[in-house]
Amino acid sequence: MIAIIDYGMGNLHSVSKAIERLGYDYQIIDQPEQLKEAQGAILPGVGAFGDAMRNLQERDFIPAIKQYAASGRPLFGICLGMQLLFAESEEHGNHQGIGLFPGVVRRFQGDYKVPHMGWNKLQFLREHSILQGVEEGYAYFVHSYFLQPETTDSDVLLATADYYQEVPAIIGKGNVMATQFHPEKSGEVGMQILRNFAQMVKEGT
Image (tube, rainbow, N blue to C red; front, side):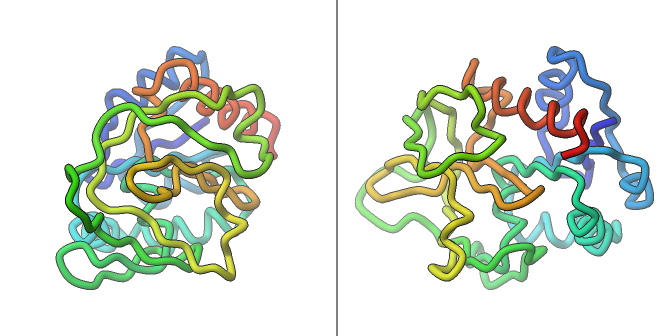
């Protein structure tokens, strides 16, 4: 079973429908103890970083997510859910993240449209199980803040996109993976990524 974490700020409907279309069992959970029974977990996210962390903390999900990730079971973050996996964010002040990886979430700065919204081409940097059979195609982004991983952990980057600068698009290390874009809204490219995640859950890898 794939647990989709409901902490009040995720696009639960579209994510759950995508998993349903792939034919895999899922459950939307709102209690941290429910993660204990999950073979896979998805952390979606829409909105502001600070609000998301506050909601996760109030629901006592932060230690549960850390324990889940340490167990080796597959964990997948989507959009804001990817950013939350890192150490901190500068969105509307400084906020601490879940901290599975080092890195800071910063706002786009420049004389161009923010948020970065729409279809953008992916550039793959290295191989990973989450990219198995995925074409280097286009994905759908909606975000005003981007991840700046620490150079000491740059091997976490699997793919980038170009929006006036190099934007981390897919990260993955061990059993933890995430996309800055919405795979459930990114056509076959996104569905193949979700299919790969679900297959990893099924195989227990």
